[in-house]
Structures are given as structure tokens and as C-alpha cells.
Image 1 (cartoon, rainbow, N blue to C red):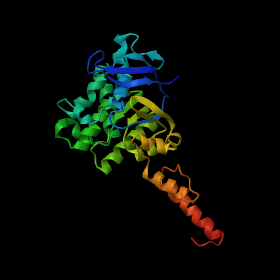
Image 2 (cartoon, rainbow, N blue to C red):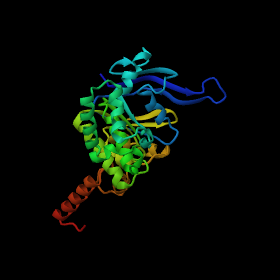
Image 3 (cartoon, helix red, strand yellow):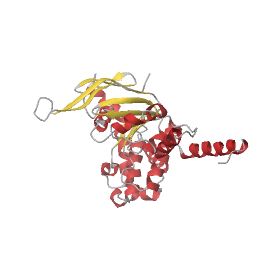
Length: 291
């Protein structure tokens, strides 16, 4: 049974008014426990609206959202439970910080789901360690932290609730390359160690190729591609037509393949491409050919 499932999900803003706009149309997806799913699409395609439905922040105009097989809107009194099961880290999550100290900010979620105080402290310490922050910052105001520290503290606050699904909307936006890589490595480690389902909204095709098991592609309010990384990236032409790119290394390998060099055109990692090229050189040297 999938951890999250949607059936014919539709949402309209300002329905019935002159400002009416369809945001998502007939969305049917399934996300399994422990999957790392990337959600990609150009600005305005419907990504943010879709993820807000997955923990009940928005109510569908029509269609259904299921968490562990339960329709989350069948009894609105249970929505709070589902919102803690599906943790959401918004774009620029530092804007989620509001408490007097970093400790109180991270502890806020666990406290509100009735976790005992002794366990709250354990969760705070574990989550702060996970995101790579020193415990000495726990007594500081979150507004005294650097940009990268704020980002990691906000993620720690969601992680401390031990959600079964973690949704991250462009969590590395605005960070330098080192900060981006560190947060993505930490998210990936959290995914591996806890069997948590991850839904990552991203515009970075290299990051998607490096971390995701599956990709959902949105365009014009709909899911237009849904499959493994290689299954989706093999539609490079379609991705470009809707304004998306493919990893740079894949562009290179596609070009080499089109010129008759036998390299896998769906290669998505630099390391894999290097190994293939070295093997080709060795093969030519073995056959006595000049490279």
C-alpha cells in the first residue's frame, strides 16, 4: 500500500469568480514508503499547489488524497494527525522560524503532538546533529543565525517530529554550492537511515539525477511524465519542449552518442561517464587503434 496516493485530484483558485484559475488537473500519483521522489516543472506548473494537498494544507476542489490508505478529508478532525505524518519544509524555510531560541523552535512540533519532555530533548539533540549544527546554538535566537544555519534549523524542526514523509520545496534555494551539497547529503542520509519517503521539489536536474529514485514532471497543471530517473530523462526532447533541462553530463553523452561514440546516452553521473570513456580508450589500445 502506498504511503501517499491521489485520485483525480483537482484544485481551482477563486472558483466561480472572474479570477478563477485551475492550478492542478486530474493528478493520479502513488508514492511508496521509503521512495525518494523528485517533483520538477517550470514555475507555475502546479508543483507547490500539489504538495500543499499532500498533508491537507489545501482541500481539493475535487478528487481524493490518501495517506496510508485513508482519505484525509473523510473526517477533517483527523487532519492534524496527517499533517504531523507528512512534514513540510517550505521554500526559504527560515521564514518558518519564530520562537525565542533555536531549541524552542525545534521542540515546538514535538511538543504539539504530545511527546513527553524527556523525549523532546532527545529529538532536538538528534535532529540538530542530523543537520550538522552545533548544540551551542540551541540557546541562541534563530534570527541571529546565518542563512545556511537558519535553513538547517528549520529542517531540524520538521525532522524532530519524525514524519513518515518529508516534503521539501526547493530547500537549497539561495544557498552557495557547498551549502546546497551539504543539505542534500544530509537529506539523503536521513532518507537512507530512516526509510522515510522524500518528496523533493527542485529545478536542479543534476541533484535530481544524483538522489531521486523516481521523477514526477508537471506541466500546465498536469503530471506529464512519471517514472524512474532514466525513464524520464530518456524523454529529453519533451523535457526541453516544456522548458526543462537535463543534466549537463547527459547532454554531453547524448552528443557523443549521436556522433557514433558508443557511450550510454542516458548517463547521468560524471563518474559513470568517465569510466565509460576510459573503457573505450582501453578497448581501442587493445585493438591497436590510435585514440
